[in-house]
Amino acid sequence: MEKRLILSIDQGTTGTTVLVIDDSLTVVARGYTEFPATYPHKGWMEQDAVQIWDSTLSSIEEALRVGIIDPKNIAVIGITNQRETTVLWDRSSGMPVAPAIVWQCRRTESICKTLRDNGLSSLYHEKTGLLLDPYFSGTKLKWLLDTYDLHPRAKNGDLAFGTVDSWLLFQLTGGTVHATDHTNASRTLLMDISTLSFSDELLEPLGIPRAVLPDLKPSNSHFGVTRDVPFLPDGIPIHGILGDQHAALFGQSAFAPGEAKCTYGTGAFLMLNTGEKLAKSDGGLLSTIAWTIGSEVCYALEGSAFIAGAAVQWFRDGMRIIEKASDIEAFAQKVDDSGGLFFVPALSGLGAPYWRPEARGLFWGITRDTTVEHMARAILEGIALQNHAIFRLMEQESGLNLKVLKVDGGAAANNILMQFQSDILQTIILRPENIETTALGAGAMAALGMGIIPSKDQLKKKGKIARTFYPNMDKETVSLYTNSWEQIVKKA
Image 1: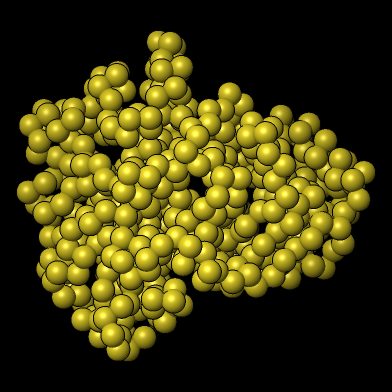
Image 2: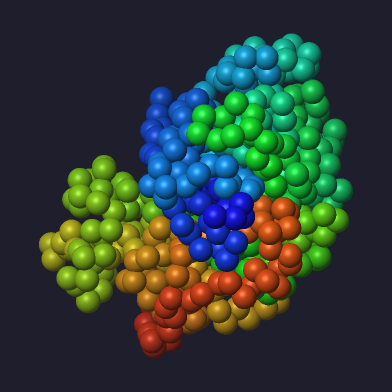
């Protein structure tokens, strides 16, 4: 086989997927490994960065073994990752000096409040496009440096900070490269997204020294080559890095301003391409970098809901009502509707457009007629209803009427959820053949960077739609749902 295979690493919140893709972006092999998180206190969430790396190696080995692939035929590697999760490690040993703080962790609420009380909200919002919320990496890094008394070592350059892409890159290159791309850096609260550089104005209030930060590069850059990686030969170039939501937008070939996607993973993430325009939101959306390709900078508006597929996991693992996540669809199919039951999936607070870290999940409208089937349906409807609030705000602040939404992620396979999402948005939903679009996006960026695929136009021709969902709910029922939701979400 000609050496044109792409190995794409998709490091997610609950597991790591590795795809081997050919130059037509067809998946020829797949590996997947789950790994745990711990919850040491209420609202806290941690992971072991070593387990993240081990899961990546395990998934690489599985993909190569199952696909009977000679690793010498891997031409390039792409990486996409759970964003905002914060890793801090020793440069010499390559080992973490503290647990990785996961993006869903809420432990830095007091740090964010202090920054807000000091009048810094507008500074951070103007320069980063983000909000002072525990979601983002900057306050997590400050917490680690403060709690473990690591400021001296950070200032001396002994320690390296990174989001998960940086951690994987460091390991893949045998500790020779400490870098990140602009999409991941745009989620740290530390980078000015207008200048694409870390800003002293943002670093100083958090007490973060520049010596701990990674190098910044465009998403399609040559980031380095493999060195001493089990299962892989030395010298494979790493040519594409993107945060997971940015990779999904790219993988959906949403290259034109006004094109939008929603990824249904652990959370739900709507992203709208705004092109060269850095659109600012005053209503709770985030301004972010969609991707950078050489000198090309593409911006986006994003609305992040912290809980989507994680609500189904809770229904499985916490409530123990279903055995596997996909079972929720069969439960929900047994009833015509949720029987007046509403679910607000605020299991880790509420993200956009509410930004209420103190919010908690709830079922509203339980009666003696309520069954577990109604609960299953209400969970799926709750995921879609929180997206409705984000979607309408996105239309309002962009000035666009979004008639089509591209979807991906594991929960996008759920037909009831997709049909209800189409109904409640009154918008056409396009679901691609391969819903693992984050991994495909990272692979496509790597192929573009390597020259295996010459242009974005060629990428656009490769996407195939598996199913289209059309809205069929009357507007009166839509209004009943959405108006009720806006009242109930206030009680969360």
